[in-house]
Image 1 (cartoon, rainbow over the protein chains, first blue to last red):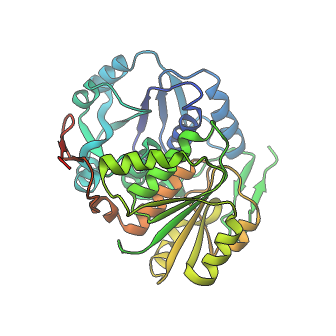
Image 2: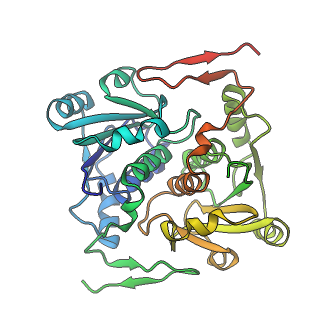
Image 3: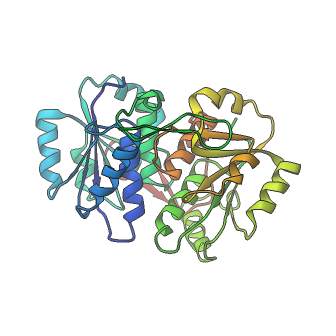
Length: 181
Length: 181
């Protein structure tokens, strides 16, 4: 399950207002074992954030952030050559009902999340529209829950090699091993 | 499991920069079945956001947002009279290892999350420090995963009554029932 390739496409980003949520979405994609994140409307400098995290906490070269202009083109290419498209939306079919079907998809998965409303055509271009509950909440939470269910919690055992620091899980306080590079 | 009382305490909020993540954290607390959310450093007008969501999507009077000045006092009172305190942190014990123990706690739970770094004493005041993976990501994602594991996904079956609108989960597009009040 863990070696399944998953990419994330996040559509939309409003400057300043969404800066923090964009960072959260990227960090969740990375920490929960995705391979690539595609974003629209963000500034190139967002790559510095992820590079710093990789440098400190490892996993360099395993997670790639790509800024794209044309999400329609990406979706089209993905459908033709890569795999299935899953759009996370509060209007979709409930995750509890469909996750077993998703788990046996034998292809790569592109997960689409929106910073706010996404264009209507996304609902029709996607192979699955899946809700993480039918109440409004957060695309960051939705992405995390989807990946946790897909990877069955095993994403937290994944190793991120090559970082300067490594956490030893601790009952109280912080235990961090600092490596010499 | 679903009728367990869970409150969330979010510590810290930087004006403007954190506005969106604060909203996400509140909406996750509400949508994932918590009863109360305590926040520090936020403006009273954040309550309008949650009131609007309750008005549209239901659940009025079931989820309460409280702005507090003194989190230390809240934690002290909680420990003495209410229940257990669980702090979500990337430095804590892994959720996969401890969730079974957490599930059988026969008391209310206060979940603490931080907008950024939390004061060191939180680690020692808490009954449990739990990591949702030992990589940096998002307190919104961490909260969502913790609640999903605690409530075993059943939080998505919870009814939010009294709203103007209700979603019927749909394969494509949006199906919403608008109620007359």
